[in-house]
Image 1 (cartoon, rainbow, N blue to C red):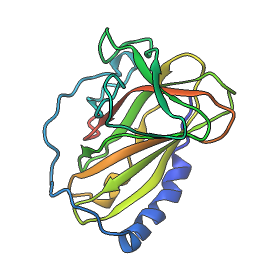
Image 2: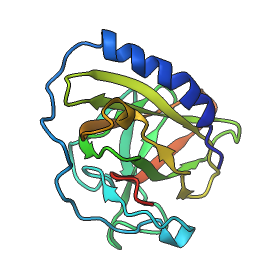
Image 3: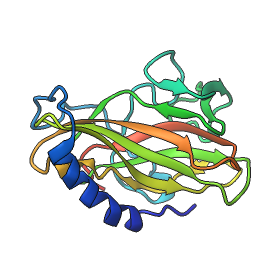
Image 4: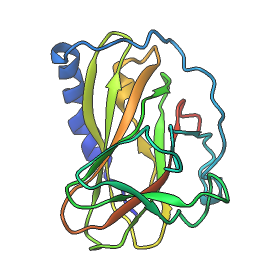
Length: 202
C-alpha cells in the first residue's frame, strides 16, 4: 500500500510558510511538551518499533469525539487484528464525498507520525486523502494534506504518515486533528484504530 509523501512534502513546506503569515489566529495550546499518555508498540508485528498513542476514540467504540460528514459513519465490523481490544467491534465507513475529522491531540516537537488500519473494497486505483488540522503555540491555525493512501480489500496497516505540522513549531508542542476523506469516487473505504507517534521516536 504505497503512500506518496515526497511530492506532498515539497508542496507542503511553502504552504506552511505562507500560513505563518496569513492564517487566522486561534487559541494557543500553551504547551512546550505534550502531557504523558499511554504508549504502545502497536505496529511492531509489522516491523514498526515506534511507540504510538491512540487518538481520542481511536477505534470508534464510543460515541462522539469524531466529526463525521457526507455519509461517514461508524459501522459494525472491526479491523481483523483487534489491536485496541479483543472486544472491539466497530470501524469507520468512508463513502464517496464523506469526511471524518478526529478529536484534537498533542504532538511534540520531534517528527511525529500517524498510522492506522485501512481497507478499500472498491477500485484498486482509488486513494484516501489524509490531512492534518493544526493549532500552534503562536496561534496559527491551518490544514494541509500529509498523504494519499492506497489500500487493498483486506484490513492492513497503512504506511507511516509524517504529520509535518510540527515543522511550524520546531521547539514546542501543538494541537492537531486528522481528517480522512476519499480522494475520488472509485473507492469504498474503511479505517480503524488510528494512532499517532507523538514524538517520532521510532
